[in-house]
Every structure is written in structure tokens, then in C-alpha cells.
Image (cartoon, rainbow, N blue to C red; front, side, top):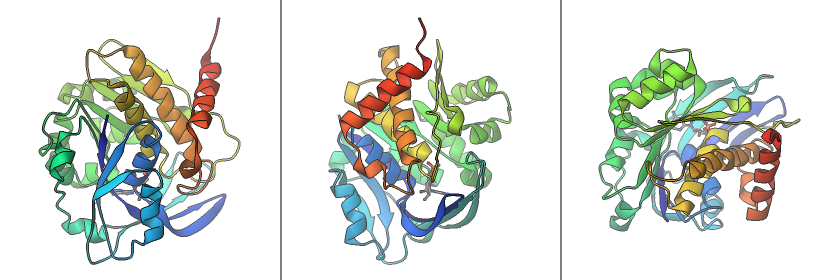
Length: 304
Ligand code: AMP
């Protein structure tokens, strides 16, 4: 089942207590697609500049991710820079340069429009809506956003959220968007807009899923060393959506257990990403390692 993702493809500069990297491949669509590619065929839609080389392109092709929708235009690729201190759940954005994203108008190749699964990664909500509107008969559309857009494009964001089946969002952003500190209330406010599933990511406190009849909590794997949390949220979303697409799950009427397992696969992919800088760890996995870690997660919460 094909999974389409639109989002940022970026160069990131990251500093954390474990080190510093001045320029590496990142972006919401990149983390998402690499994570999801272990579960289902993925196609990426985005834009890069002429500083995007073959070594960057190969990160997608080595995972057999379709790049027909990855436009290359003159200019510089999106750039983001962030810093983490001891509390890795908190990050400071030092710089955001939209560059080629500033004039991007995503246009889906005709066969991409038939894709049953779509993830709208964190980019300008107007662009997210533009892609949403081009889909022919989507089974499940999920999306993410961040403070940058909640502050800058609130009305456009609300419009986009109304067209989603599932929202996968950070706790701080769920609170900021809804004005509710309590996460049950925040999730209810977001569900009231239309999405039947709301997943709230809480960094190393795990993630919680809110659906009509249930609340499900996935833990985060206790790790001694976290190198770089960047992309953990997108990798979570990639594991979550990738697994659901591999099961052919729909927003409603599917097995609740598929959604629960998707929560654990999301947590598994996020836990790998933070173990090294950038995409280094995520790129090198096997399905066996992923399934072994899935079982490790199951043992974390199993009781008789
Ligand atoms: P996360 O999974 O939330 O840690 O996402 C990290 C990725 O989001 C980084 O690789 C950045 O390149 C990308 N990013 C940061 N800010 C933005 C933004 N305003 N729009 C789109 N992508 C962004």
C-alpha cells in the first residue's frame, strides 16, 4: 500500500550535549520516509535546491523511496538549526531559512494522487492543504505541525486540520494550539475539529493516542545515551503510518489493535533515531532489528 509524504527536506545544524554537526541531511519528510520505508512503499514530495547532491539523493534511493515528486530548483535547500541542552525534550530553534520552500507549489504526479495513504509533514499549512486537495480517494490522511506555524498561520492550519483523519503532534504544540494544558482536553479539542485519531508525542515520556472509544499509551524506550532527538517525532510518524499502510488500515472500522501496534512501531522508530546524529542510525536498520525492538517494547509494559 503506497504511502505518500509531503514535508521538508532540509539541511540541519544540530548541537546537543553529545556533540555538534554543522550540516547534515534532515527534514520532516526525510525522517518520515526513511522510517516508513521499512514497512511499505513510500513516495516523497518536496523541494530541494541545487546544493542537494547525489550523496543526499541516495539516502532516499537506497531505501527505494520514490523521488519523482522531489523537485529540484535553483537556490538553497531549506535550512534549520537547533540546540539541545540536558533536557532533550526541550529544544531551541536557532535559525529557520525557508529558502526554496518559500516559493514551492507542490504538484503531485498523476499516479501519486491515487495513493491511499498520505502524511502531511511539518511544512506551511497552505502547502499541506494544496496537497490534500489533489488526492483522489485517500484511505487515511495524517498530519503534523509545529509552533512556527501555530504562531504564524493559525487560520490556514485550522483549515488543514479539519481535513485530516489523524493528527500526530507534540505535547507542547497540542497545548499551544488548543489552549488546554490537560492533554485529554487538548486532544478532545483537536478531535472536535474532525480528526478521529489524535496522537500526542511526549518525547522521552512516550506517546498517547486518543480515539473515539479508547486512550492508548506507548512508553518510550529508556535509553542511557541520547545523541540527537531531531527527527524522532517524524520517525515516530513514519513507523506509525508505515505500519498502518502495510496493514491496509482505514481511519475507522479497522482493528483497534492495528492502531495500538502502530503506536509501538512508531515508538520503535523514534527510539532508533535518537541513538545517533541525524539519519545515521535510522538508515542502517533491518526489519529483524525493528521487530526485536518491538518485542522489547512489549516486555516493558507486560504484566500477568
Ligand atoms: P522533529 O521530528 O520534530 O524533530 O523534526 C525535525 C525536522 O524538522 C528537522 O530535520 C528540520 O529540518 C525540520 N523542521 C524544523 N523546522 C521546520 C519548519 N518550520 N518547517 C518544516 N520543517 C522544519
